[in-house]
Amino acid sequence: MPAPFPAPDCAHPVPLPDGTTHAGTVFLRAVIDHPRIEVGDYSYASAHHPPADWAAHLAPYLYPFSPERLVIGKFCQIASGVQFITASANHRHDGISSFPFAIFDGAPEGRPSMPGPGRDTVVGNDVWIGTGATILPGATIGSGVIVGAGAVVSGTIPDYAIVSGNPATVRRMRFGPDEIATLLDLAWWDWPIETILAREAEICGGDVAALSALA
Image (cartoon, rainbow, N blue to C red; front, side, top):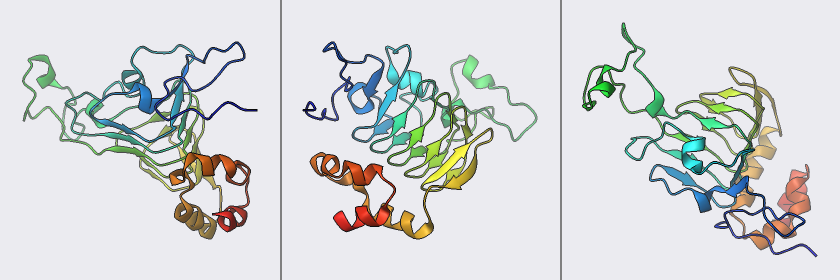
């Protein structure tokens, strides 16, 4: 008989045979308290060497005063070594020099060597980001996307695509257009967790029509 499914605010949701929990896997909502990061229920990250600060570990250039946000949807799976390089890491690259003079004398506001505010980085629901992937500033990753290990992702990735490489490119779509539209309309990630667990076989299977019929 499985144990009750952990609540989304459980810090360490993976039980081990000895009764302890896996220190390197966390539900992010439970361990991140950052004004510029928003994480949906049940999204988790793993690390071979668990950090003291998961926000800084995942998004080291996203500061409390940054203008941009990092938004991660529900049921996302973030492997060890993934980094989000958010817009506050940017330098100007439209002129002669990219050197950030303003950061060295403590008065960056309005200085010509500083770039303007960048876009939010947004990850949809049920996204799997593989080991060592890098997500660049302003990327928008659709729901159901799989990001290959070591990929460098920028721009907009369509729902239910598989991407890999540097730069990341779409290798194939996981489902056809009609099935993707159905899945987005079903939005199983918004169902109560009890319903999700009862429909685990259909959600993890490949038959979109079967899941739709049970919804």
